[in-house]
Amino acid sequence: LLDDILTNSSGIRLTYNQEAKESPKSTSINWLMLIVFIMFLGLFAFLSFYVYNKNAKNKLANENGIEIKPEAIGGWLVLSAIGLVLTPLACIWTIYTSHYFNLDTWNYLTLATSSAYNSLWAPGLVSELLLTTSVLVFSILLIFMLFTYDKRFPKFMIMFLSLKVFTELVSFLFVMGISNIDDKVLQDARTSLIKISITAAIWIPYFIRSTRCKETFIR
Image (tube, rainbow, N blue to C red; front, side):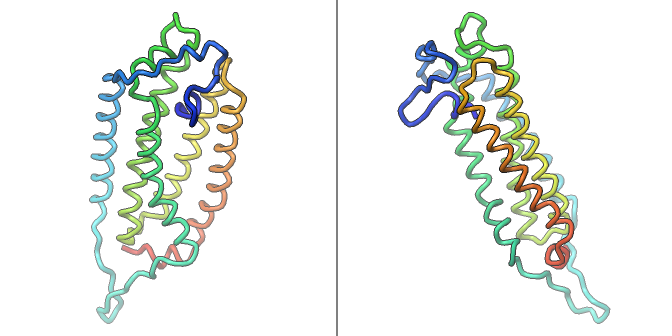
């Protein structure tokens, strides 16, 4: 979202007003945001590692002692798997290309003396970065669960989709709270929220009712 607000292919976008031309372009590092990011990245990674290893991957056998093998990942699950694998790449790209760790951009948006100041910028940017980080780590956890046929995968996938809806909702409300935000940015945030809501409305019932899911994720 921050990248959408501040930049496009030609540089600074006039998001707030004509004074946005003052927006800084230097690369000073916001060490506080970087440290917060690393701390929460480590915390989320630790929690994911703990959750993943909490479930013993025992092989199931029938009454004759023959191993019951999970159903191969196929059907509509393939589409879900592709989207899941691409999610960490998208999150990394978002964090890398955005201005979360640019000190001058942070000061431009959060200092009361700046023409772009709004009291929502600081908590909004921190929240967005942490939510993006949680989606990144959660998606990696789900990839491991997917390819090890973890029986918890459908339940965790439902939680993941709910998290993504919540993340887009937070971004949309954040944008709505900025009085001088560009209309296109607001429209993009609304569109993203609608898209992920529709996606969740389709996939959540699938993971609840699908027979293939029940036969695939059995370990």
